[in-house]
Amino acid sequence: MWYKPNNESSIATPAVLVYPDRIEENILRMIAIAGDAGRLRPHVKTHKISEVITLHLKHGIERFKCATLSEVEMVAGAGGKDILLAYPLLGPGIDHYFRIMEQFPGVKMAVNTDSFTACEILAEKASLAGKKVDLFVDIDNGMRRTGIEPEDAGLLIEFILDTPGLGFRGLHVYDGHIHDQDLKKRRARCDRDFERVNRLVNVLEQKGVQVGEMACGGTPTFPIHAEYGARTLCPGTPVFWDAGYAVEFPDLQFLNAAVVAGRVISKPGGNLCIDLGHKSVASEMTHPRLQFMEMDIADVLNHSEEHLVVSSEKSGALTVGDLVYALPTHVCPTIALHDQVYVVENQQITGTWKVVARRRIHMND
Image (cartoon, rainbow, N blue to C red; front, side, top):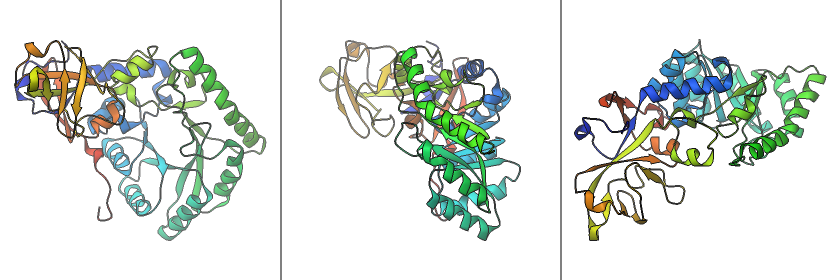
């Protein structure tokens, strides 16, 4: 029962518990796959916690990928040296990004873009502010979410190179559409979809354009991109791991380092009502949303904002007030529902870490 602290009575539920020794082991396993800490640019969306950045830095990982301005601030404040905001920067967020640049002048920063419109807006704002915005061109090689088609990216890159106030840093290629459980099929699909990116790189090099960094993939394709030395690797989930990816990608051997804790608050009809509602557990997918550590769930009878009602053969062994522990199916949005997490070391709760980057940026920030 590595997950169960001896002083569990101090846990105010619902809660998330994290385990620094297991986090560090996962970081070491990431480095082993990458071959070198310098090839990694981990996505911080999974944890949003400054102390986790400190653990990365301890092992030589200095580059990070973010999805929000709060995450950018968190990483810069924690000592990250190179930050990619892998999300379109528009609206009032542009001015806030400039303020972050001013606050952390020694930190290298860049932003994703995939359109002439966004580049024109950034160039105008940069000119007025006396700034230069470094850009990664976001490539869509199958995800169909953000990104420009590889065949169209050359013109956008030329525009960036020719526009004052803008700089071209490289390509961002996220292939989150690839979820084949079988590693051979995943590799074949990853390599096939990347062929268009390779053609783009060849065209750019023939024109004398330095491609710079290629920030590639997420967690499922992490070990595949690792086989290509020119690519930077951007896994996120491995730092905490979760029950969903453990089942979906058995070839990826990481340790669960984040556990959800809840209390039995009622026993309606002999079933268990636990304080693990939608507001404490990621609920964007169908059940099972949790994998309980010490009991099998026969059925989920109700899941609402603050309540989870389940039936289990072990319900008779549990009483009101008892704690239960579970692995979230999807850890990233689960963490974002909590202001802080409990830190467990040597099976003792030793403190808390704030999930500082879960906050949103507002106009008055």
